[in-house]
Length: 362
Ligand code: NAD
Image: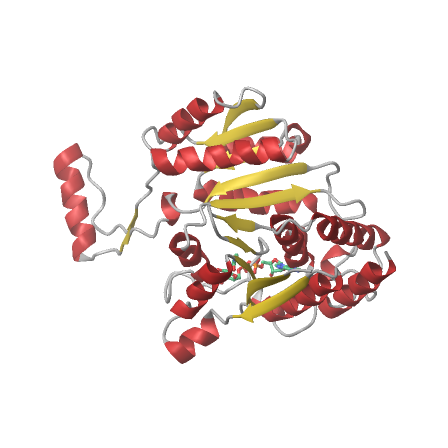
């Protein structure tokens, strides 16, 4: 039986707790792993002066598969997001976030089954930014005034939004290929091409062109604001959604809200050779160390990883165990109970215990 070398980044905040739960559950499927544990984030930054040491990237490059807990990003100051850096450094250009309803999950919606495919490397997340008042920002403001006659206020901070033909073509192809492989019927491109004609306009133009190569799959487009309303009103009409980075980030959380919250939303960052699996949610620092939060989003990210490794039987078994656990509603965390202060809610590690027991039964 093969043993998979997988880089494990526990992360910070609630990351280590949900990682511990995920490792136990993944091992209980019978699939064998050799975990290469790599620390990243705030604590590493304090010790080593960088939140993402080279050894972490080297480990992922060597193993080609990683699973990670969330990592805190300081807001508006401090180091750049480890998550964004990782995606860019390893060219993990596709972020895949399936949002599927589970029977028994606390939500206003039933039968949601959408997959958000988010472009991961460019758009406003490219990290090309100019600080208010800096020489570079003022130079750029002058350049723009000179070339376009448009005056940007001098006290502005500026973030650049690059959308390339290259990155759009590969993310849209990824979405269509995913749709084909997974028996999906429709791809919807999401954009704001009516306003941003040269960035989102290009995204739409390229998406429409790529769609011609996939006549077997329906294609349509939606403007992002309308898309949000449609998803809230009739999510059952949608299937695979493909969009630039920022909209993808926001719509992923919206999708998580449709199926019962961030505690249930898995994710994967995928490149041509490397894949990093992680929950959609962040490090929820206020719950750190309390054995309180839901590990299911990371465990479901583990299901995506098992599928990526070709371990379909184990993936299906684990997904079934998670579905049953949610439907039974007994061994679930506070966020899945009718009210957050429900005294019958169990902790992170008890969810893992229950899943391990279930996996042994089947
Ligand atoms: P968050 O997702 O960490 O938490 C928002 C709220 O969602 C929490 O307060 C909690 O109520 C709930 N929640 C999140 N995960 C949960 C879980 N597993 N179980 C139950 N409830 C859960 O979002 P935030 O507060 O905006 O971000 C906190 C930090 O995480 C920030 O530094 C942010 O940059 C970082 N972040 C990291 C990642 C990542 O590592 N990929 C993703 C998003 C945010």
